Length: 455
Ligand SMILES: Cc1ncc(COP(=O)(O)O)c(C=O)c1O
Image 1 (tube, rainbow, N blue to C red):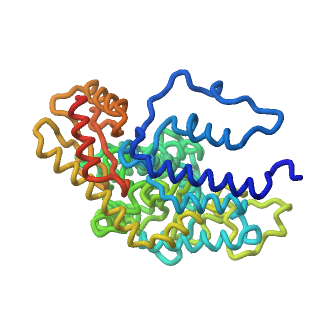
Image 2: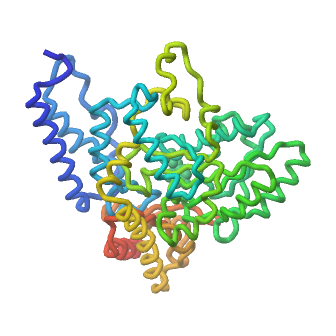
Image 3: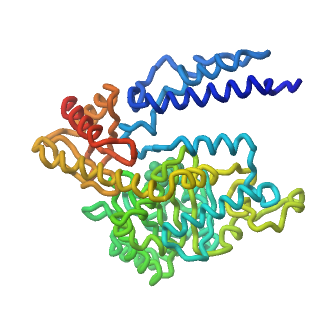
């Protein structure tokens, strides 16, 4: 008897049981709060101690479903409008199960030719959707933060002589993942130039040009321009073509953070806003945001074939039998042992087709516009940043920051809906990010109505 398994019939029964519970969860998600209230008495001490002998797995599964996992956010809830949601889909959950069930290894071709082929094919899809050149290579990682770290490590490999002297240019609304990667990679934190955004929350090429002159005069080595294809706070898109021109002119690396916004290129409106994204030297894009995948899946793409390998190849003698395949994904990023993140994106696209994804993204854009129209109709509200890539920011006219924060807090505590806040021009604003294809216009109307009630 295998000490770490159960009889086949029991495994089948438990599997069906878990899947039934998940389907129940999705069917009734709407009845739950999008963010559960924090229980101050809950912590690791609330969990069962590690048993020495076997216990009933179904009881432990029920505990996960009923007591443990409902605590926190439901990022796939149709009224989770906070930060950036993760409106995943059930087929991708099945794909994760299939991957785990095979203990899929996607670090080498010999270790996982099938999984590696799926990853290559999926990366090619992403490349095509982004309009990047045929030379583009990539790797799937855990998300935008590790993607940024991976991309900037590769960029540094290509372009940087002295990490102490290198400078890069971002704007005040650039995601903190960039500053984090900058620091982890050993760049001088004070050489990341955080430039003031224009009134539309976009990076201004003229501000970069001015900073470049000062930095070069000071003997520093400008290295990269980092554009956002959808800032987290407002959805604003930096002028990507202008930044690409500037980077080309000045011999700088052009990195684009499209972690949340890049998939909008699959819609006509998004393609217009994101023009120039295809010129990135490196691009980060998170399928666990606007490509409807469960955590964790981020992608790094670069048209510089071979560069990721240059940055990340470092084998030990014990790996010599595994060399020489079509691709060795361990050579394209920090992980050696890595499961297959591609399976879920692949299987969900195979199941629903690209048109369904395009329609789902367009729906998110339209919902934010619906929110904007409602807010504009009511003189009590002030739109601070218009609907852009499914994000809108607003406040109650005359509200102080404390009142805005309290309105959002009370709205979340009420349990029906979950907006969030951010700071724009140093003032607190309420914010909705409407990327869930299961959110309805009624959900938006109910959300604004409740926020008004709690203001
Ligand atoms: C624009 C942007 N970049 C980077 C990140 C970081 O991504 P992750 O949380 O997947 O590490 C986020 C997360 O929301 C984001 O919105």
